[in-house]
Length: 368
Ligand code: FAD
Ligand code: GLY
Image 1 (cartoon, protein in one colour):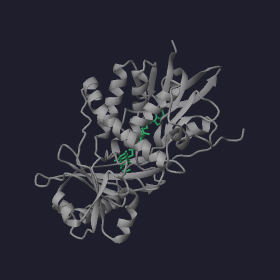
Image 2: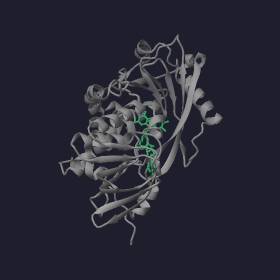
Image 3: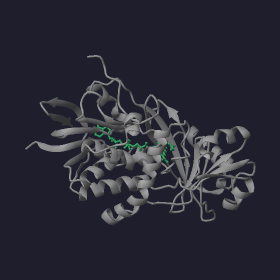
Image 4: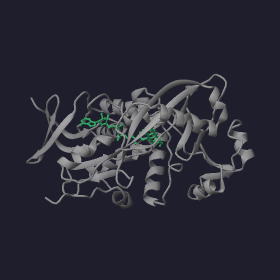
């Protein structure tokens, strides 16, 4: 018999899995349809920073308040998901030191430094926190609340939690086409035909075919990011070190993640020598002692970027049975909890802050 669900979520990265979790928790019959395995794409490539402040570049109040809200949900989810799924999210305190090497760098930090939760530290104060930091710094913005997690674990925990609340996680099932007949969607996949009353597009950088099929003119642009992980028994980094778009993130297992390159319109998923060279040079400039550490792993992933670098989270402009949660670009890990909760609230017709609805709304219809 053809399988039928209340909601089908297309894509099982951290965004699709978070949506399934928040829906299943409210007893909604939801399925996640995932082409490969849960969480193996952009989600697994992420460093895991919850960078509400550190990624703040333009003064967009609604975006910042959404990011801070999502960040705050993690302190609840840490216990909630562990109790439910037994998966530890790898929650790591310490925060981010956003370094300034010049007056220009410091000026660029003005918006971050205007937040009451952020402090300016002079070079000696930075060195008190991290002895081995680059000697030529002018200071740093210390962002204690931008902690980090293990993204693949968060995704697994959302998916397992969703399953325990009754969701179906359907892996190795690629969605090919979606058609609406009367009030039901017919979802053609590589395995079977599936029916659903509502659909949520959460396919990350691979969302463009669905925009097209559903009459929207958007295109998702890949921004490839490469990372390397290094380890050493001799160095302990307590804080994430961040400068420009590059960072060194300490993880609970003693590894340091060095990230990340930014290559727009590159769909390749291999790690290039140029990428590794850039990362090593940048990491040594921030934290010279890192040169003595051993490379443990390297990987890359495709960030899903929209035309304005903000995600789409909301209804299709003509059909409230179609929702989008895609284009989270550099901040999908940070924004996953608030995105999952917001999509669930929209489906359940609960109140969502109007400023968030407007900030992330989907427009862009084709003329048909
Ligand atoms: P994905 O994880 O890519 O998931 C989309 C899923 O959809 C995939 O599993 C795919 O197989 C599936 N899919 C696609 N098409 C179909 C189809 N037709 N049928 C079925 N399934 C389909 N964010 C942060 O917040 N903090 C960070 O520190 C951070 N660091 C990053 C570092 C790097 C190097 C990169 C590349 C990204 C980083 N990000 C970070 C960004 C973050 O990884 C992304 O924003 C986030 O993972 C997007 O999640 P997603 O679920 O939308 O996409
Ligand atoms: N947010 C970090 C990155 O995308 O590289």
